[in-house]
Length: 225
Image 1: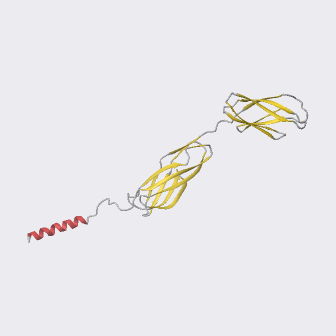
Image 2: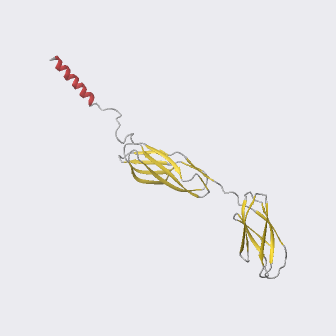
């Protein structure tokens, strides 16, 4: 009889311990919604005003499906996606924008899970370097001709001295005679401070003033003779 009473007591104590609520119990959606973020871009160095695409990759490291992604830059919405990412899966949001100067971007990503919970984190910082264009080339021209008068149908030779007075290396020169619309292209390298001598021969078909537009890497300087 004493033995039976002891067993009943032990059983009751076990049942009481079994049904006592456990503090801080973790259920699905509480501390189970984890994300891993990474960021990249389609280019790292650009010219001013180029279009850059940022890639924000989201990995679902939790136990509930991700159903929505929102990407912010400070307080500005930049993009998002309604999607389904199962635990262990990943997806990408692409954010495109024009970049005018070197900058470092950091995005805030808000994730909604299927269980109704949210997670928010910041991406790593991504720097885009803008390469400032060099100053436009500048040239100084001196032009002489081998004769002042020629018969109709005759030719005249112009000796043109081109001096690079800018800070950018010149790699190409193009001469366009204004009236005749004739072109002469010259692949020539002129370092800042350097000089190149160019010879131009044209046929004269009528009495006229001869003038040239001279283009050096996009810079135009007219010299009339």
